[in-house]
Image 1: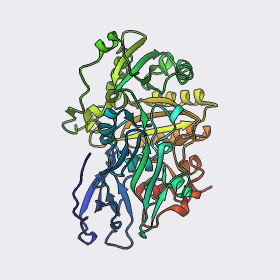
Image 2 (image 1 turned 180 degrees about the vertical axis):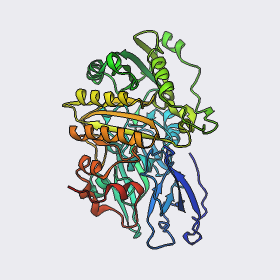
Image 3 (image 1 turned 60 degrees about the vertical axis):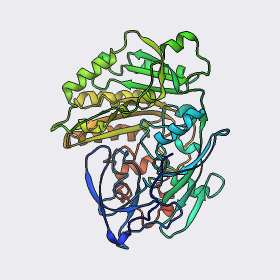
Length: 462
């Protein structure tokens, strides 16, 4: 269990500053810093009555959904206490600033695991709810919000609500996936899922085109809880859509002697760090093609079975601290979209063709299927279909032109973009992709705002 100082928050009248940036490192923004340390204390307010504020967890949102230029941030790292854990039922209650990594340290040895986890364990519970994060098991488990039993929401007027699907269901739907704009989540109660041990039974299959990917997805979803694919976004022509498909289940309680002999000695946390920000991005057209070719051929066989600790399976990038520095001083953008299942193969092909033609792309390209489990949040990103996520070095106007091209493909298909990942999401794309956004408006806290919200909620010309 982590602990925090019981000292009161710094008075807002002092107006300390906090320089924050999103994980994409595109912009560094100075904010007025407000600290939340006690879940039962009043919400700290900015010194200027006209200044907006926004909760800030561990800063792992890629775009500007966690930035509030010209305003204040309510830092939640002090809300880091566990409140209750029933090891017989797997029900956990904790404050909103607790990291997922801290939860895993507590519950995995006791036979429990997060029901849904994103690609990093270094996000807060409050951030996971506000962005309704998803993972590799959406087809069976849905999103993070599907496993939140209840939470307390503190508004700027001092009112508090304990929100759950049965009680204050409207506030629950507005806050899950609500980007931190309905108030401050002080604590939450989660339902965990049982496991036998910390190991994953995995299989990695090399595939040679998008038809293979969709066939593997349909086959794998019947018997595997976790599915995801890395895809080579740098190759076109006959190599378009090739990649590596990973599928896995939690390992059973009894492993045979041969399997036990193959287990690694252990699974350490992050032991390496990107030591500095290079003067230029290490991700470019040459390194991208070289890496993607080597990565595609990294395994000898077409199918490889392995027993793997949960950390490298779920959180491969967490092994290198501050890996986002590799993109250089200009940072990077992530583009993540989801398109409905009907035309998903053709739409995904069109997206990859556009990226290959541009000469820009990513070695962190992820393709997977979302299932039919409905997300509880009105602004939640997941919906049935295919989701593609890629990181792009910030190349200015040429990259913006590519994004406009990709936006048109996604919009025509009836898809949407992920607000938590996108630092330039246009208002029209947000509003057409999230048709419930106007339903959300009455639940906004009048003192809360963000850079992203001021951009996507502005009027759009017909």
